[in-house]
Image 1 (tube, one colour):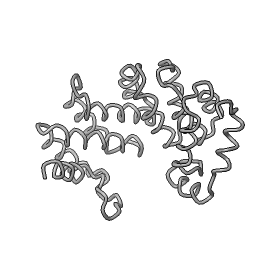
Image 2: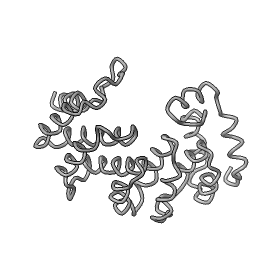
Image 3: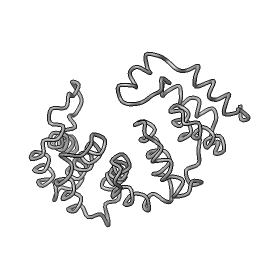
Image 4: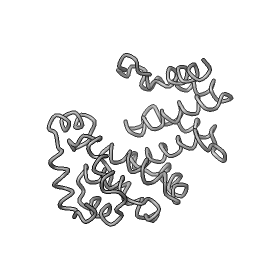
Length: 222
């Protein structure tokens, strides 16, 4: 119903909470137990509801914030507001969905990306790297790819987990998308050996950059 209040939506989310899902999510640092397919179904029914999205975000509840990213209108958020939201988004899934569903669709993305990339907070910096990785793949014009590799080579090995993961993704994307830089990307990955021993399920590609790059290039060229 279009007139649902934030309390009614929170009650609906609470009814969807599954203790088993909560346990699984907790291992990834996410404090909610709502099945994401169920959450998307709620968002589809609600449609775009910008005022409700702000109310849901303000609750601080992880499931409510995930829903807020789906029912908001990204262009209605200002740069400072998005920066504040990103700094509040400590749960990994909220962080990811805020970037994917809101920031990337905002007219302020290219103001925020370099500022976050240089931020002293590693979680905020990881957002800058995630946005940069997106540009490496889709709009690399104007990026200093060699400079990015310099930073990765100097800092990735000792970076905190979430920042390290984001930098590693950027390293792999450079190697996959830019053949001229592929030998260097492979060499950096081999030298740093970040995520070399990461447990990878059968049938999945390892996040270890040299394996990741090689496999994705093989698929494209095969």
